[in-house]
Length: 494
Image 1 (spheres, rainbow, N blue to C red):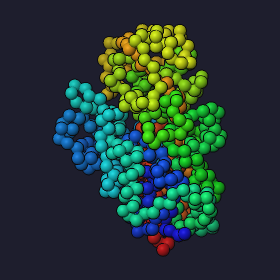
Image 2: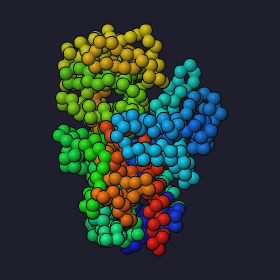
Image 3: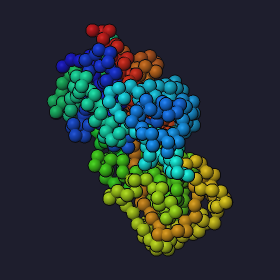
Image 4: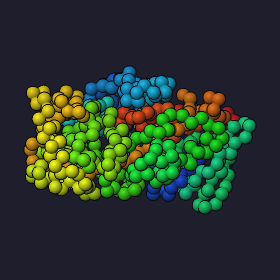
């Protein structure tokens, strides 16, 4: 089998690479380890939020042309500049992000999404998760404004439909196991296709098969003890195959290999993601309540920042607690602010009219210490500061060993609700080093001819944490760039 460009993976980054390569005139073949039903990698499990820089409503109208007059009149969309995007990437990664990659992501996000629109990918405002109504007007917060219509599954479906229109073939049940490489660079891949080994010759190869979060051995080896207990939020197929193939031929490992994107996830969720439930097992309204561990104690600042900037690192904090679980507690004052994921059928939830009765229902928690924790929390709040969910309102606690910096409300209005969570790992941060063209670099920081990478397999973008929505954005931006370069190289070789 032969092709010009071979793309490994079939999610957002991979399909953007495939489409971009096809636009260069190259023949493109996509390899997907899963069945067609399970295709799309982690992209299919996301809620579809994509972080993009925009100057105002005029830019958004290019991405969401069907915005109604009523929506525009009743919404403050604000703006999110390239500089803000870049600063957020640097801030939440503690300034360890590769500055070249950060600059490309921030500056190319808008043009990349506009390009995706040309391939019939549709976007919409994230009213349900990123905007609260204050004084009769919706206001967006946290740098996130739009999502793919249909969420992650809708995004994957749209990209595959675009690929089909462009004559791009997808080979399912095809597991890449070895890069074919000689002194002139990469010339193809050895594949297990429906259980049989075969070689596919290609002029260039794009690796876009995700990280290694679904490989328990790699996860525990690189992330450390305890990570075998984490749930996998997404696909069971991201086992690090493409990553290990590249390292075997001398690609340079790069980034935060002991770090990952990990969130609060329903305690009784299955071992791997469920496409029927999708992202619904996540529990991200914790800024408006408190979170306690088995000892009945708070262990993190729930209001340190907008959830967009904390949720990807708080899964690790939960994993570090006794028993690897926590309970999120809310009272009736904030119940209307809880995201839709709190209302799914598959949820671990208890309710009670009083705190005393709630304490008896918190499985695995020290009941007495929990009541003491709540009492101390309630007494510490600066209630003279107004509560405002749209901004970091500064309504904080005073005198606690672990403060709550924003959105602190006394727990005093029943009935109360509590949700049990554990750690859900999304993707790993360690990966391959690439340059701005998506070329994979070797240990001498020279491009490996014919080899490109995009998506979660790329290292150097995220450390410790990440701004919500930047994962899909990075996949699209660097997928498009890698595909363009891989396509041009293949056409030049023809």
